[in-house]
Image 1 (cartoon, rainbow, N blue to C red):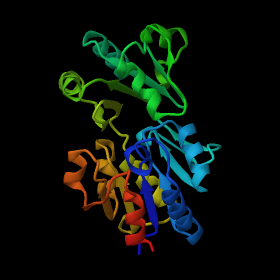
Image 2 (cartoon, one colour):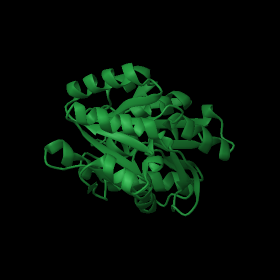
Image 3 (cartoon, one colour):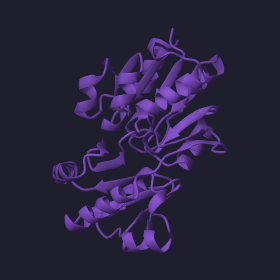
Image 4 (cartoon, rainbow, N blue to C red):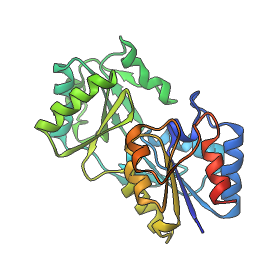
Length: 268
């Protein structure tokens, strides 16, 4: 019997219009009322998850920033808040400048970008209720505001093939960070000891739930460790190939109630 459902947000629980549809809301609320634990573990900032948790009546622990931050679903209590080493942040900014990519800095509930002049500079605002702030030179901004030691993650946005080149150069010169795609145009840089899988383990342990009693659903490469940790790891039909390759099964897409179909199959 499964006792915990772990959900990614973008590309999984949310439709391509970035909303939770009424059918998905109804089934998640039913699980919660039935006493089944539900958690959200996302790459988003905490306040986005608080807002979405409120929509589905979630009450418990949730993970944001790919597991770097763990809070209560109302955002009141912060259990964990891990940041990137300063030298990794600086290297990420410098390399993105040299390769002419947009880099976005995430600090708890805020995100910062040098410029939104091109389409990839603007793209982050489609995946959050809280637009990134344009600050010009990122290195200067962090130094002037003493924020270098506060960055939870860095994201680079561009075409997938271009980001593969960035990833290759980065990992060749700095292999102590963890890089993965949450979306084909969104490459994320995290601390090496951070993952959604570790966040899920922490949350499950707090509920005294074994990994065999967990169903986890996701769509991006940043969901790989999460679905591998769960007893039943599920990839969305619209998931990236790397996630599908390690999933126990593949459900329907986020626009065709893929999450609802898994809830019906394993919890009802």
